[in-house]
Length: 285
Image (cartoon, rainbow, N blue to C red; front, side, top):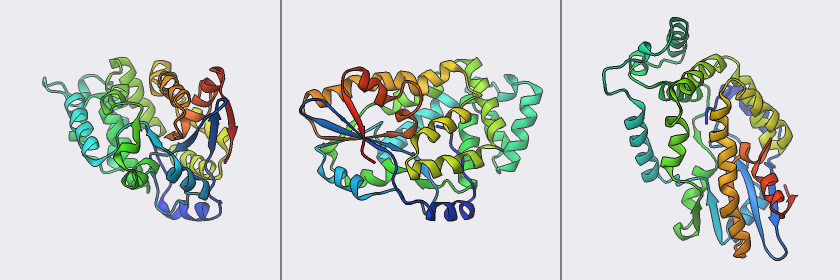
């Protein structure tokens, strides 16, 4: 959920040299199949990711499966809920729960990305981490909607299926313990300087379809976070999705499933979990 990027001027030459072929898998049983495509939720301008196969599956599928509702109304509702859960209302300030070293790092990074430190001090650690990471993304060129947001207007509402509610996604962050939130804030601030280069590589490999490299880079990105947080962010959600995806196959529903690329690579990924259920997975792009 925390994403960074190089300045746009540095990303465009890289993007133009890579033929678009983000990874896609076909998962099948004896008489039906679904297709799974790994996305990035936020992108820099100028990234070529759509392919003839993707457009073919998008047009042909009976159902399009997304992580959650990304319509403007739904996103506004989640934003309001995030503010309600992310701001102190009892007079507490962020400086009351972080130590002096973390406060100094927070002030330095907020200045670097023009985020008013006063607004951050009213926030719980998870929301401060998210706010400053979003500011960094915007400053560094990650200011374009990602895959789901780009295609959502093209899809008839009755073709859409959502794996989670916005509230469930918000709970991954807002439901973290106080200790996890502090680790999340520290890790986010520590990564701001190194993550632009890392994310440039990650986008490159996503665009090129080298999924194994995405897994390695994502593990590097999230190395400073608590195991419990990573389980809620990735692994438990992957496990939760196996049943509804298996049901699509059982019901012979032709579906295109679009979820974050990190859910389809690395340990306990959705593809491997479906294979463990007896389905056959084949890389088709």
